[in-house]
Image 1: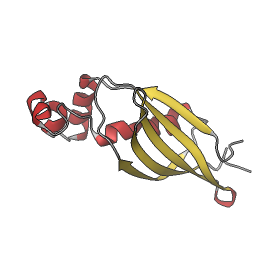
Image 2: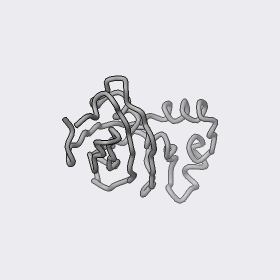
Image 3: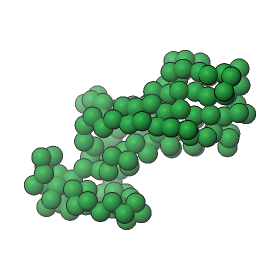
Image 4: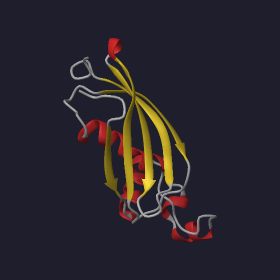
Length: 137
């Protein structure tokens, strides 16, 4: 049974090919993500990955990796992008149980992404999920 403070971590990285696939699928063809000349000329000095691609680690954790019995309903997510994220860089997604609402079978999670090498946080947020089958106290 989940309790406040429980956490799950997932280390991940993306390639430029992943970014280009995401750009094609999402329709976000911003050259800052896919054109090396634009990335080099930007304030970041190179291409950055899409913010929602970086944050997709949360859906991976909730939907596949952590305690998922096929009954998880993602109700809300807020996200703050704190630092740019780059290809071929290791990051760690961390979700932590923040608050439990037993009467509604819901859990509020803190969501964070950290650069594994520098320890800097790149994404912060919260997610609210419901599971009437396993979020029972």
